[in-house]
Image (cartoon, rainbow, N blue to C red):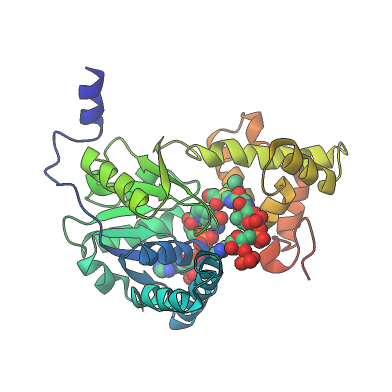
Length: 309
Ligand SMILES: CCCCCCC[C@H](O)CC(=O)SCCNC(=O)CCNC(=O)[C@H](O)C(C)(C)COP(=O)([O-])OP(=O)([O-])OC[C@H]1O[C@@H](n2cnc3c(N)ncnc32)[C@H](O)[C@@H]1OP(=O)([O-])[O-]
Ligand SMILES: NC(=O)c1ccc[n+]([C@@H]2O[C@H](COP(=O)([O-])OP(=O)(O)OC[C@H]3O[C@@H](n4cnc5c(N)ncnc54)[C@H](O)[C@@H]3O)[C@@H](O)[C@H]2O)c1
């Protein structure tokens, strides 16, 4: 009975869509995440089209991919530099770029969005692409904090819509959270799980709840670290050392916040507080608000909790 209910929930009985083997991938957004995902998809033999709003941005994305591939190759082909260079060229050949999302999606098995974290902009994008992509094409979002069901709501392919949440830096981080809404079909969910595995990642299945698994646990932890510091209960440096050496995290909470971007973390927390104002886990931090207001957003601006210049 439980199994049956599960299949219904995923729309298994109502959907005639087959299991899609994902070969052609369109990635919308060539920033930190989109470039990383494009690199990993191209490295595992997929044909990738990377889409952004200008050729200049896309040139930067390709530069980022090249730089990251060089770091990968330095390790993977340590004794065979020529084979390493060959690998880089092969991967780069698998990536094409475009500023025209509408044309790019026409031959795609998967359209994965990694654009700005704004519900309306994501909805508009998918609503437009829904009319242009083939019927079998799966849509997915890499959102950190927005409900997948809200993003998909402007399309007519609710059964072929899910979440694929990657982690930064994508080439290094092994996890992908695969998110199914109450309308995502079992075939779509399985295709997304398989795709994650083909990328060499380890997928976990998530419900469409705020922050899925990782961010739901981690964002409150980062905020509590800041509040602990604000209360004068530890220095930033000591808190970072404590979490690295005490529980084996590769970065302390202040280092990681600067790496992700304080604006991103604050944006997520503000959104959750709006949805659930009485939850003390979502309480604000004066220091975080002040740093973001001053434009001290972390590594990307040269200063956050620490200075990088
Ligand atoms: C979470 C709550 C916040 C919510 C906000 C949204 C967040 C979002 O939704 C979820 C996330 O992503 S949450 C964020 C989740 N993320 C985390 O929690 C990250 C936690 N941090 C880590 O796991 C490690 O510190 C790193 C893996 C980043 C670096 O490793 P390390 O050992 O500490 O330091 P190292 O010496 O520098 O690097 C060593 C080697 O790594 C390799 N390599 C590195 N970057 C590369 C790249 N881009 N390309 C290719 N290769 C790359 C390279 O081989 C390099 O050697 P090289 O000789 O220098 O070329
Ligand atoms: N940065 C992280 O650590 C992280 C981790 C996991 C998930 N995410 C999520 O991934 C998404 C992207 O994050 P990011 O850090 O890569 O952002 P980013 O700012 O580095 O990149 C976003 C890119 O999208 C482009 N873009 C914006 N609107 C567009 C549109 N309509 N069409 C095409 N391109 C458009 C921008 O020009 C930019 O290059 C967000 O939803 C974010 O929440 C971020």
